[in-house]
Length: 96
Image 1 (cartoon, rainbow, N blue to C red):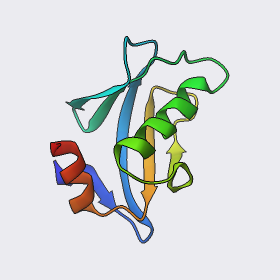
Image 2 (cartoon, rainbow, N blue to C red; image 1 turned 135 degrees about the horizontal axis):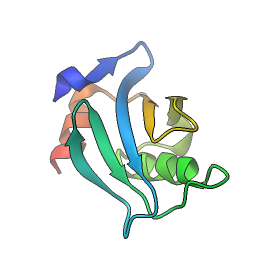
Image 3 (cartoon, rainbow, N blue to C red; image 1 turned 60 degrees about the vertical axis):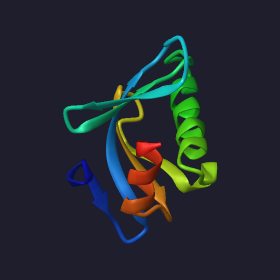
């Protein structure tokens, strides 16, 4: 799993695949090299992007400002950067 995470000088980066209009917000596991994120928000006017950033901030126990979409603003395939999060913290959060 950790090979799917890139360590940067600011924190970590990883790929996600977003499924908007889901029944609930959740991480549903790895799909290839991307973490699949299911969100209730629709993909309209950036609603799903904002919901994604807020969900990931809450899930990984960081502030919303620490979470950024570095690639894929208009795609369901995105690259996320979380500042100040280590690989170990990332792994622990995913394991529960």
